[in-house]
Length: 186
Picture (cartoon, rainbow, N blue to C red):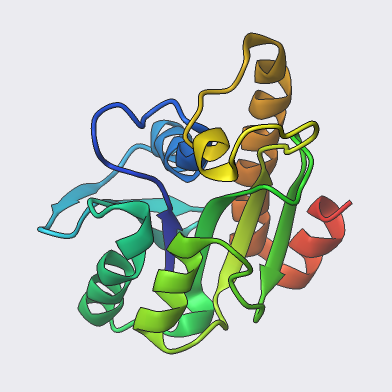
């Protein structure tokens, strides 16, 4: 079973920000693969789905981004998961808008949500799908930038990266991470 976690801020006012692109991927996957079961806990909202005949759980933490690991650890304990079965989807400043990158076994860089997951699970050996949110010509503090919405002219590239992320999830489940990395880490 794969557990797919989209990182974001659950609070009102953050839904359309760059930082919530992980939530957007979860919402799109949920629409494409209607849930068989809905999970509600104190720490996250979840949906049980099936992709290519494999059981999958989608997770959106109810915590702030910097405390995402609490929700992930709660799901980890509930599903008796293995680290390698977790896919964490998040925004990434260091990847151009419209691009994604799949990695595993790497440190969190400066991403506080990923740092929280690493700290709570005690491992960095989960799969990550990093979605580029752009930082070209960044002339405001990065905290303000990640909490800002995408500009209308950026939306086509955002849609492109969301489709790539969904394709990457499907490929990881069907064929494994190596093939997905070959296809999507261009």
